Image (cartoon, rainbow, N blue to C red; front, side, top):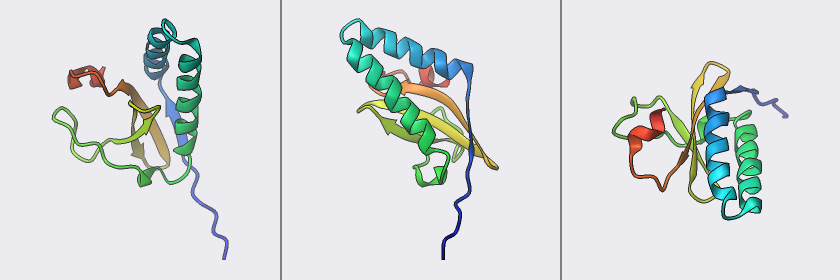
Length: 107
């Protein structure tokens, strides 16, 4: 009984690519290989959202709308923040979870 899984369209905003670039540039100042690993890990996390994105937990935070966003933790302390609308998955933010100011996450 093989059922084909629903495939979602993953949409990554230009803003997210810019965030990822800033994070990678900062890391590359210390370790270029770690910066490359961050980019590869992000790509893998984003690809994983093509199937069953609802398996990831709902993000609950002071500045976040209730039950709207989910997250994927990757590369130890980075968070990929996304929402599901129909069969589309929108990646809205890449967050360095070590950063204390949660309002920064909503840029």
